[in-house]
Image 1 (cartoon, helix red, strand yellow):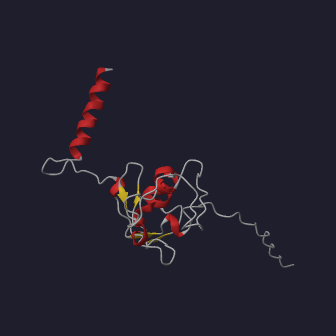
Image 2: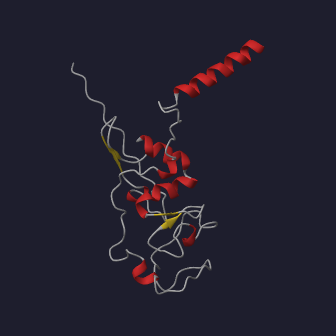
Image 3: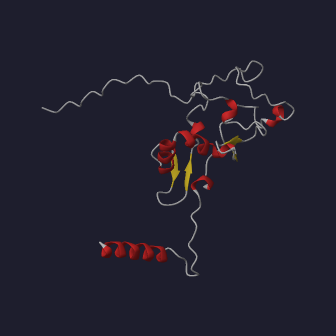
Length: 173
């Protein structure tokens, strides 16, 4: 038993030593939260960004309510029992979003905001399995934002009507 523990400790020490740089410092991996991916600009509706054009002169109203003056075209169907505008949009600076931690992020990093609740989708999106990714297999990649395919206020796709099965080819003879 002592030999197994000693062997395990030796392996851990060796692998830690192998990870060190020549100067003896262990390289620090960049946290995934700070990873910047190349994405196109967010698909804003015409004439509404920057949001501060209107919101800078407004008093922040944090009361959960149905919007009646502006943005009446937005219908929240995204966990609407628990979510509201200021859960994602920053109250003090409307030109950015904010994470649950309070960290402000630009709209072109909205995938980080979505990934807080939809972690499996974020993982698949980064791997190129969910959503559209272009670029090189082992090199530079470009991604579409979640909002390029999903309306963030109503993200569920409408059900698609199945197409009829293809007609099998006729065999000669």
